[in-house]
Amino acid sequence: MRKGKLIIFSAPSGSGKTTIVKRLLDKDFKMEFSISATTRKPRGEEKHGKDYYFLSPDEFRTKVKANELLEWEEVYTDKYYGTLKSEVERITNKGCNIVFDLDVVGGLNLKKMYGNEALAIFIQPPSIQELKCRLEGRATDSPEVIQQRLDKAEEELTYASGFDHIVINNDLESAVLETEQLLTKFIND
Ligand code: ADP
Ligand code: 5GP
Image 1 (cartoon, rainbow, N blue to C red):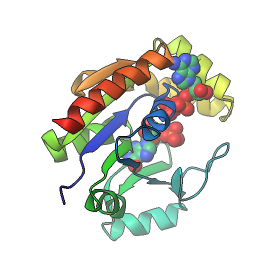
Image 2 (cartoon, helix red, strand yellow):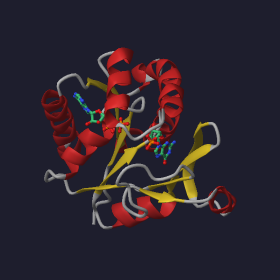
Image 3 (cartoon, rainbow, N blue to C red):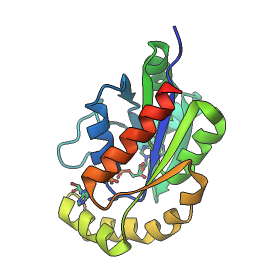
């Protein structure tokens, strides 16, 4: 059976990456989401084993030491995120394509590891002001956490040119359509 392809999404927090990925998972791309491990707490309706594997710092460290992570980053101070090798194997071995939601550094690292087998897409917000509005509108983070994410966004935007494609998420429907077209081409090539 042909192994699945990898689709990587990165963006500053609040750009709309999760919203776009969820819309794409509903379409017929034979694609599954790689559930990452993280030490941050669940927010909103998030569930363990669906959105993330929510781990304690000790549990996360144990997995790092056991070499169970393909990549991992301290994305925010004391908040660790990582891709589990078991997720990649589970999904690609059954021939499904796999979609990753990673920070910009993790996204580019994975692209480097997989080359042409991976498509790396950067979801860009129309502006920092709009990013702030979206994070506030999502209403899942404290003002301090929102500020931390905005502070990091400026730097994250400088990584955009390293990705295969940049999709500006201004109008959601247009951004979904554009990513859908990129995926169709990549998966069928
Ligand atoms: P991310 O996964 O990049 O952190 P989310 O998908 O959680 O971002 O989106 C952040 C917020 O912005 C959510 O409340 C979402 O509904 C909203 N949103 C996403 N895309 C758009 C868009 N094109 N226009 C306006 N709001 C959007
Ligand atoms: P959030 O807390 O908003 O869910 O995610 C914060 C950041 O961590 C986002 O940029 C998201 O893409 C990134 N992230 C989520 N999972 C992983 C992962 O497994 N590895 C890396 N490097 N980043 C991740």
